[in-house]
Image (cartoon, rainbow over all chains, first blue to last red):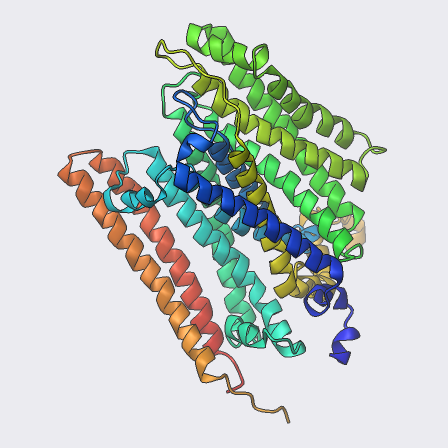
Length: 448
Length: 82
């Protein structure tokens, strides 16, 4: 253990080896919130969906909004991590692990929401017994199942060298777990080659899987003839929104862990600036897609479509819609375009705004369309109940709790990748740079 | 000389068990998809789409199971200790 204290990366081991009172307070608080959500869910099971604000017309509310929102956030991880690894971006090293953990955790939480939305959750078994692949809902089940499996594997495989380090260098109660999960990894050349090959296969496979998941989620809406949903651009629009909200969540997590575990030496300003550029680009993409979506609807002037658009732009959902525009476009663009504002607190503010904005986007996609049914029935307004708010808080608390537990067991920043970056990264980057640059032209005189 | 460390039996059991679980999951997904295909044939309901989706899904689950098995078996086989 003394040797470990002299390790230049001891900061990365410290959350696993030492805990302060703050950590246990946070675990306690989050557990209470989750318990409260559980009580509210049991109450929903007893009384049925009448305890929610759902009604005859608005049959999808908070739970489906949160489902789309959480699954969207999952794109932070695997997709960003895989793209950064594949493009050999050297600054990725302290970021990838956090991104991958976000994916695995939010997929678990997001995937539970459609089950929570069922008045009779036992009927979820019917999906497996009598499911029909004709339905986009079943496409979702398969796509999310596949994505969860892929992202968990993609989180775990690059973590093996770090687990082996923990097995060899620490002496905690979890040594048996590290021995089990490290599969006898000793860092030999052959073992490194096996891992490298597996990571390459996974990162190539995981990108199309991640893109397909959110495309398939958009199909739940766009495959219907519902006004405001039946759109051909919903696939890329949802994928863009997902990466956008995922990047914002990743930035918030990075800033939180930097502060909590004193990772200032690993997560430097440059990392936030690069991620900030990504956030800015996706803010502009998102605005372009939103504009396209509305322009085609307004130009077509179809009465039902216009009714939904009026609901959003000037009607009862206008405050949510315009707040969404401010959060997703104005705030990030203003903050991230000016060097003076692009500080870490500024980026944190922009990221939180984007997370709120993207949640409102899911709300303004789902509820106004359902509030404007094609059948001549009077739509009742939708107000989420205490149960729905509690379960939302429970979902957020579960995300934070699982993340903290993960950080207590495994390094939140990839230690081996940081070491590799120090030892080999510089030379590799130089070699790559040499290969991009044109060769020096030697004149004939010099050559002779 | 480095002390020779032997992996405890229960760890080995857990490792073999986890590989088995991966393949049980893969086989279960296969059975589920076959059930969906036979249901679509019985109902004469979007059989082609069902087949296309199955052709995409099954190899991907197989790939993930294969990669994990490759890593697990590869790492255990190439370790120096034991």
